[in-house]
Length: 377
Image (spheres, helix red, strand yellow):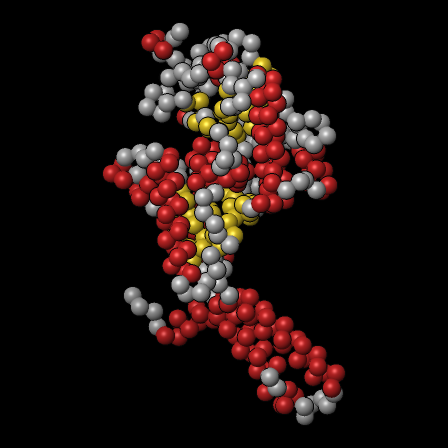
């Protein structure tokens, strides 16, 4: 049912745009001298009118800030299972913060219920974002993009990798926080600063929260002597920046053997080399290197996420170069095992666009499931 005119007007006044219009109109009137002429009868003081004029000019600037366009917010739900509550929360946050909001429907990413390849899915996401950005640019709006992702580490890495091929005035990643009293908060901004040298504040933060931080030496490759010669060029880079029980032990074992079930009790580690065959084995790696947090959780701040993303990328490249020298191979292939806040994972995909990195998929639904008789070694 159509709303009455007075109700629509009241909603406009309560909105960000309405507040901006009121502030600019009122502030402009005072600054231009309409209202001060009325006030002159009450207080004849040059200082008084100067202060009023300066104050109203600031009010005009505030009104412009509320009215100005603020880019596109893109909600990207990549989980196959319904995430209605989280999608709604992120959509509301985007509408509050941006001129335009794009919610990518999960059905578009799974046409006819068919699972697209990671490359095809991310191509589709990137094309949808580009279409919306071009649409708002025609109206004079800025082409800054803020991502509101709900995705696995595997999809998040591929998303960052794909978006590294596009140039926007700003590309940031929001974070769905698990901290009490928080929901959607700024994650990090993707840009060249993530490759810049670490400053003292970032180094202090890393020392406080990582086991392998600046000053303690880069994560060193640990060789696997039993690895066949044809696989010696493969390096497993294991990143644990979120609570994840046996993650490092499981990933190290999978990297050493190529087997996805634990040798101790044949339970599944959750790692998958072939989505169509969840029991398929993979190729072993010549070595592995580990980067992990020393705290229960990283601080959920932009400064922390950007510092850790920067250092994780630096550590990956350092481990790659160290293993190339140690193994004598000039073509190192990195197998990435990662459990981290999603913005950091996306940033790592964005940063490694020119590196040979493959993410090993992890499915929590398979973790610790027992093997059937036909799956026992």
